[in-house]
Length: 205
Length: 205
DNA sequence: CGCGAGAAATGATCGCTGTTCAATATCGCG
DNA sequence: CGCGATATTGAACAGCGATCATTTCTCGCG
Image 1 (cartoon, rainbow over the protein chains, first blue to last red):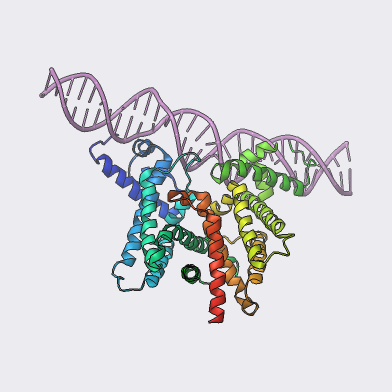
Image 2 (image 1 turned 90 degrees about the vertical axis):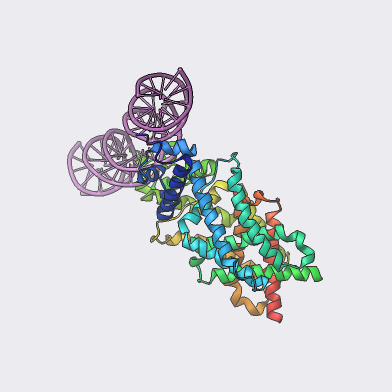
């Protein structure tokens, strides 16, 4: 109908993202439908393309919302733990990684199910959200490292994130269930602790 | 048409899997089409359902083929390296992990893009292929561990696989490219070496 | 106040998908 | 040869993302 004044552009965008995020959480990436999201908020298909330009644009906005929530979740878990030792804070961060992923299975998995066409680069705002999470973790990794090797913190952070991600992915995935079930969180913490211990040894040796 | 005697059931299955695997490698999971595969080998849509029961059945067969190739690839890389030290053989296995994933980007990624409906368990033959790869790696991990802690090999193997998977996933994914680019293979090897070193320390301490 | 330019929203339409299933074609056996 | 069993077909269906001519609305200008 064209109820132009019901919502500003920004409001409409927000409504789409909120409902889209809910829908993603409900049905997951494979069953997600842009039409369905539009219908639920009382708009038609075409409006998705007016507001987000493309289907991929909508998905990116929804995944961006997931990243925002993830960063908030991580920071909330670390706030008020200032007295904890750096290693304990790292453990908290790992727990937050797993807890968020499990609490938002579908939305979290959608982050990795979706891929832009090969040549298309990630939009800058989206990339910024990813790096923001990376940097929050990097602060913790740096605090847990010897001061003299602070320059290695970025590389080590990414490696440790990959390590934790792998454990979390296999846990949600069911891959871990194929053999003896163990505790993926404990394993992830152990691998991170191993890496930091080995780092100290390398530095001393 | 109904050219019943052109191929036995097993042959037909093989033709579908071969062409399906090729198609998956060409276009990736998101653009994969069962119709298209059938068309390419001169059969109609319905035959997919006769032979594989469902779309998911076809995907599982194709992913199963990828797992077969993966195991072959891994074993070929380890064969003839009997003189290498266990740690070197583990490095070889990690290189094989990455090399296979990069050589078969789309097919490898499809292993993780596809998920069965929530309550459905993996078919036993498929699960067997996954455990076969796991066991091949476990042999290498066990060889690199102190003999007295052989019972910890299964748990450690899964944890190290998750570690390597995380690095490989981020590498193919582009996540690593978001910050300073480093060498994910080197990082993965380092994390595995760290874990084994820490394990020896725990055992000695 | 009225009106017209331009923006916003629509939804029919297209080509594609997986899935179903009645109809058809083919085979092996008696 | 003929018949029962089985393999194969492809039209039909509901749904998808994408497009775009059409309709609806808004708001500023005269």
